[in-house]
Image (cartoon, rainbow, N blue to C red; front, side, top):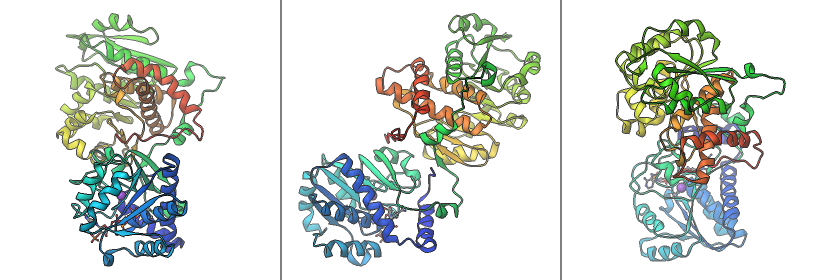
Length: 522
Ligand SMILES: NC(=O)C1=CN([C@@H]2O[C@H](COP(=O)(O)OP(=O)(O)OC[C@H]3O[C@@H](n4cnc5c(N)ncnc54)[C@H](OP(=O)(O)O)[C@@H]3O)[C@@H](O)[C@H]2O)[C@H](O)CC1
Ligand SMILES: [K+]
């Protein structure tokens, strides 16, 4: 499913209206009906207050009002903005409502107390004040109305996007509506997934409003949201007539004398994800400890220097590197003098997909030029702090423009970037972005990154298509986090995420129509 900007959505709308010939009022009717459907599903009883602005977002709100009134619901409609500023379709919705004999109250300063009382009593408030056409800080009376709305205990449904959230950047204005549910139309917008605005969205429903695929194929849409249906189709098959060689061999180079847990987590996660064989390369003094914690991998003892991987001992890797289907480097490496040189030699040698994580990213940020020697696709898995180090900027700068930093880095260095965080982003070397909707706060704990690295290695060992392998690992990791989160958001350990990989794969394998990805929103 594509993720679009407000401008792209406007162009798709225009094409649908002008070239396909579907009238704008039909799109608006479909949008309003979709909101009604979601409201009635969740809140079939109680009175409803509709706040409608002067543009087409307000027009959608008036459609919602008409349909709910047709069904006999107790609805009060408040219309904002001057009459001469209303969009044509909004004006026509006003006429239709009045022609039906329904009442509309136009907001005036003197009636504010009446609005407040109405909102206080409401079971549901529909925010159809402003949508994708918002420009600049909110002008009066919207800040006041939003303040009042926030004090009510009613459920809040945002039409398209909560008023005050920028649909392209997720930035919030001084005042923004905190919604319980947002119903958006045709495609999700960037603002639904980017913080701080994403925290205002609540549950997100993407509703079909009859935009035909012909209208989208006219435009170059690059960015997509991963969906359960899409991921299910990409899951590698597991035919009965198969053996361990069928599912690939992963090599994970990890650990140091001080860090013996990370390699164990990565290796276990890789094997649980389904690869046939996994070799764990460990510096010599750490090997007995690691081998004491996990039985399944093949171990490879690497000469060490002060507890870390020693430079200059690559002959064995050179000989065997082509026998692996994927190599992952990073968990628990630590930092040491010569580490960058060591990493550079490995990058030069590896000719299968190469995952760089954790300390490998920190070593890499000392000298990014070593990426030029890569012979194969490289996948970087930074969290925002590591991304900041790679880009030479602050973590806060990355957080403000996750999409921009991930996309630019991936294109500049011709690598895949998996930028972790709520709504993990996958950026491809050719400049596309995939947004992952799965995940939970249960994943916010040390070790969950090591688990993801192992899962990426495990999945890439089984799949020819690198892009699909990355998407699957990220999606299933998030799903495992959701399964853990359902038990406890607090008590989850990285090992619990590994245990949840099986149930997550099972859930995805048997995903039917009833399995819909939830968008937690906050
Ligand atoms: N395919 C679809 O997604 C469809 C979406 N629809 C809905 O249309 C809106 C976008 O409608 P649009 O009319 O372009 O814009 P808005 O309704 O969001 O806002 C325009 C009005 O808001 C005023 N405005 C703008 N900024 C501010 C501000 N900072 N403070 C106060 N008022 C503001 C603006 O007034 P101006 O004087 O500034 O021009 C306009 O009056 C989309 O979100 C969907 O809900 C279609 O209905 C169906 C297809
Ligand atoms: K809105």
